[in-house]
Length: 309
Ligand code: UTP
Image 1 (cartoon, rainbow, N blue to C red):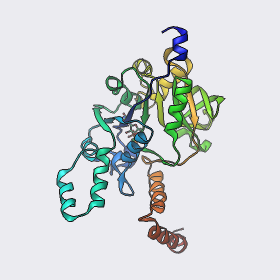
Image 2: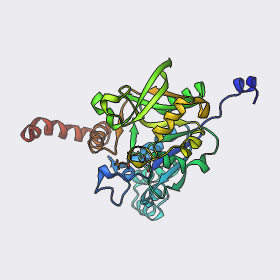
Image 3: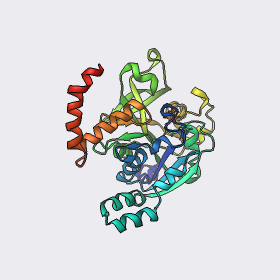
Image 4: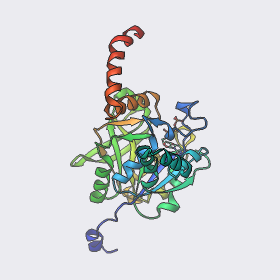
């Protein structure tokens, strides 16, 4: 493509979302022994359904799930269940019927199996045949972003404007940075940063900043070639952060890496504490359950909790 065409032709619209859900979920054992952690209920809906809803709300209707050894419950959840639908229809329970059907109608969902969970980078490599040579989004299946704080749409817009890849960053307590990938950045414009370096789970003393990578990415397809030459890193796993670090350093390889700082509500449902917080918050806000639950919670906090302390 000549320089003028490259400058004037619009960037391809992103339509594909990849949702890795093949991790072992060891922090949540034994609940995740036979059930993927992405299927744990957040109030009354599995975590992964919120993630698919977020993808479709951002206009991504082609979803590829990376599943592992316990993939059946994920597939069944997004498939029709005629027996259950018939039973609800016979009972005249149209409200539950429509909730059951909702997960099936969300998007076209494809599956690929990651035989061995060799890390998030390896999970992304499994998506290459489906994704092809277009930029695509990655949404971690256990990371929830409140729909009122639309992060993915901002990231897709940033990618359309600047090109390259875009990662989501969030300021965390410096003592917490060892749980995340950490980024060093230079401001570019309108809340978009140029990422100059990344470190996976650094010791707080070595962290380049307290900007943590959270589970949303818009990636240039050049990431696949970089992942192919990324050796196993921390924990013996192929780390997506290591590939992004290479891309940030050698922008000729797969374009530069940008960061969008997120200040909204996010829940890491793979972490037990955050999982509990997400349920309490979302239950309090639900119109059907909220009033009764809030009233119980107030009494519990003021009367029963002091006895535990
Ligand atoms: P995590 O590191 O949170 O997942 O990966 P994990 O390994 O299951 O967690 P713990 O530490 O053992 O509890 C983030 C996301 O990437 C997926 C996970 O399913 C999760 O959605 N993942 C991770 C894969 O799909 N494959 C992998 O090999 C690793």
